[in-house]
Amino acid sequence: MTTTAINTTQFMTSEQLLEHWQGHRNLTRRVIEAFPEKELFEFSVGGMRPFAKLVVELISIGGPALKGIVEKNMEGYNEEGFNPTTKAELLKKWDEETGVIKRYFAQISEERFQETFNLFGQYEFPVYQNILYFVDNEIHHRGQGYVYLRALGMEPPFFWERF
Image (cartoon, rainbow, N blue to C red):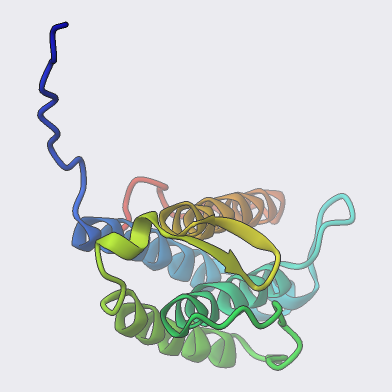
């Protein structure tokens, strides 16, 4: 019987993953800034939610989810507590949550990324898969924001300029 040793090299560090996510957050922030105030809260296409509502969803996931992972709290998802009425309020909360994300992300050990966690008591996946979902969800909703800006006759930020 022959045994083959497998040499594994880490593809990405947790710091690189956070930097990647923060790059997406920087770009999403620029999309928020690009919207005219009224359209940010009222404009939609094809029955989709206005972009401000999509941003509230993103705000309600990232920081609270990481806090739940760190504290091993499976409390349900809730986006009812924050109802901004201005772009300035939305951007302020976005920036605050960026700090929350950095703080809690730093508390997740490399081993925990592989641990299964029942996020919001609904999504039972390894921690790293939940974090990748947060990024994917943001990209998805930012894409909707791009469609809205184009429908409004506006040029959205270049998607590759994340920093």
